[in-house]
Length: 381
Image (cartoon, rainbow, N blue to C red):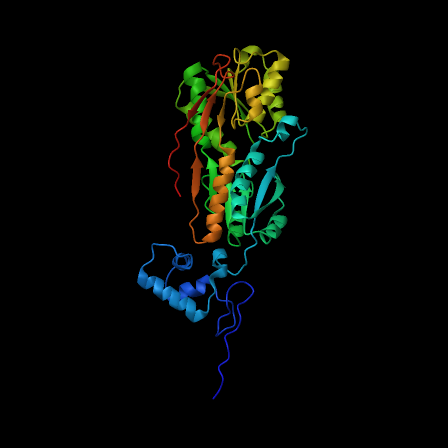
């Protein structure tokens, strides 16, 4: 009697080879033979609900028939876990660098703290790299994608087509990306609502009518959302106008340059409020005005966005919008871990609420410190 040969051992990628073709068995093979979606197979593999008993039994039968080992199912294809995620941060090159811009409470420092607080509980590690905002090194990012289980991208500076390409290789979540992004998950602050509340406070509570804008870099989706909010408020308030725009870079120096531009104007031609894309540029405007003898807020109000600690130390203290930077890191990391566990999840957008932080640079009395939570509309997923 002929002795039956044992089945081949599992392949290194966590899935067995197909017994007929010798090719690795994937989640898609199981879905095709069971006549269900890959999402259904993933739910069965991860013992999730929302699957009929009869369907679950059929999928399990196919898994057994093909010899599929679901160790690699969390990656949707055939890769072992590395227990490492990547964080890609955006570095903005400025002509000069100020100490305030390297303090620990700035954007990526806080985001990283949020990521780390979650990832350490999962016994995983974070690999961090920086890319230039003007010329991200795409080949290096492709190489990085092979060293991690998933990637967190900051600010959406990498073009959507490249994100879509990477998302086919591994899970991707964008921090502070555009709410219109469809190639990957996005977790961002509700920049639009926060900025609307800020500018409305200037216009309705302080009667500011001639506003000047210091924009952020054109590659930053959050800067664009804040700019659109300013336009929205001005359009809804007849008699208010945008009297000028300075194209900045989120840095203190670009704020100083904007301030110097305003100082060069005749006093009667200056705006009565300067709306800055972030706190660092607002700090630069305050520094330029202090040197030029412009009184804030008596002559010109100045406001920012982010609520970094140095803004509260200036005189006058900076009115701004608080975005939950640490929570951005936590929520983005949580979403990435979910996607690593279940690659069939549909891309979603999560908007985190902001707070209007009212101090005295807008025209409120010295010593004012009022925080108002800004309502956030439901984000479409």
